[in-house]
Length: 147
Image (cartoon, rainbow, N blue to C red; front, side, top):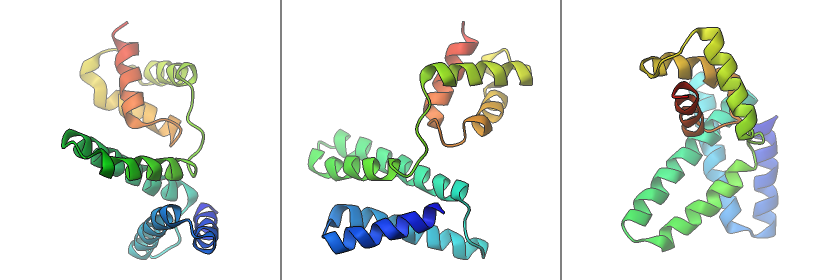
């Protein structure tokens, strides 16, 4: 299980003295444990991936805020943390694969207008499950629908 691998990697990071990796994995593990306690069961790999994705999104928002405030010194550790977290996600799909999945999902759902963006995203997101960022998916849906 993914949560077990994260725990094992945390132990390795602690033993090796890799404080940056240790801190990122500790925070992630705490988030996973909190969600596990809230649901009163162990999280599936898919749910762990959602937690990782959520943390990446939060860190990207922090980077944008730090950079807009001229604090590159605070943005750099966040960039490193994102790289550590992304290692636990499935490989991101190529634009070609994403485009073909988007076109297929839109054809299945009958969406052919940007006004139905919510329905389009609802049709596509389950098919890409963790292999493409929501913003990439949104951009691809817009690209396909405006052609």
